[in-house]
Length: 342
Image 1: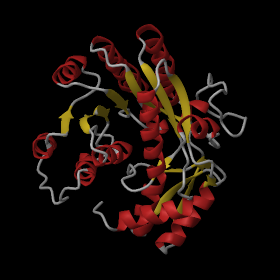
Image 2: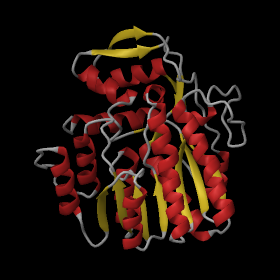
Image 3: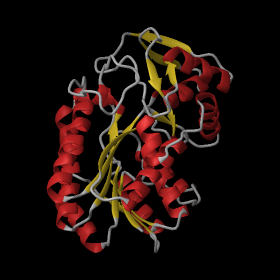
Image 4: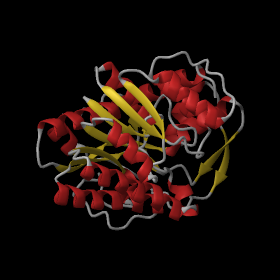
C-alpha cells in the first residue's frame, strides 16, 4: 500500500513511518520542519525512523532538509519539504503519486502557544487540513486517518472522557482547531464519501518525544541540574500513552478503514492510567537518579486539570490494547534520551 503521511518527521509520525516501512508499505512523507522547535530534531527523527546513520552533517536549514530528502529517497520512501497551507504545492505531490490512504498528523501543536498565535493555528490546523480533504476529493482518495486531541474535552467534568461526551467547550485555540477538524471532516465524509477515523490522542510520550513537552523538558533540565518550570500545585493529571501503543492504535485504525466502508468514527487512544504531575516528576527523578529543582509557577491559561480516556470503543472497534505502563515507558524514554544527542 502507498500511504501519504503528513508530519512524518515528527514524534509520532517518525515512529509510524518506521513501522509502515517494516510492514512492507511505501510512504510519502510531507513535513514542513516548522520552527516550533529545532529542525535538527526532525532530521534525527527521520534518520532514526529509516535506520540510517545519525551522523548527519548540518550546515543550514534549507540545504540540510533538501539534502535529507535526496539522501533518504528510495523506492518505498520519499520526503517532501512542504507546508500543508500551500495547496498548489500539495497538488503536485498528489498528482505524482498513487495514494491509497492519508494519515494526517501534521499540525501546529501546543495549548499555550496557540493562545499567543491563534490565527496561525487556524491557518495550519483548519485550512491546511481542509486543503488535504479538497485534494482527496479531487483525486478520489477515499481513506483518511486524522489526528485529533484529548484537548477537545476541555475541563470535562465526567470521568473518564468518552467519545459521546459533549465537546462544545474547548478552552484553547488549539483545542478549538481540533474540534473544527472533526466537524469539517464529517462534512467531507458525508458529501464525498471519504471514509475517516479521527483519533483523539491522550498525552503521548516515549522516545523522540517533542522537546517542548514536559517529560522531555524535565528530563533534560534535571540531567543538567537546572530548574524545571512546575505549573500549579502538582495535582493536575494526564492520561499518559506510550508511543508504541499509539502506533499500534493507528495501524489498527488503518486496517479497520481498509476493510470497512462508509466509516466515520471518533476514537480515543489513551492508556486509562492517569498520573498526576507530582507522580510523573517523582518517577522521572527515580529513573534519572537525581532530584529536580522546582520553580513553582501558577497554572497556565488553557491548561486542563485532568485528562482520562475511556478506551472501551477503541478496544471493541479496532482491538486496541495498550500494554506499556507509565513506569516502564519512562524507563524506555530516559534510556533513549541518555543515548542520543540533544
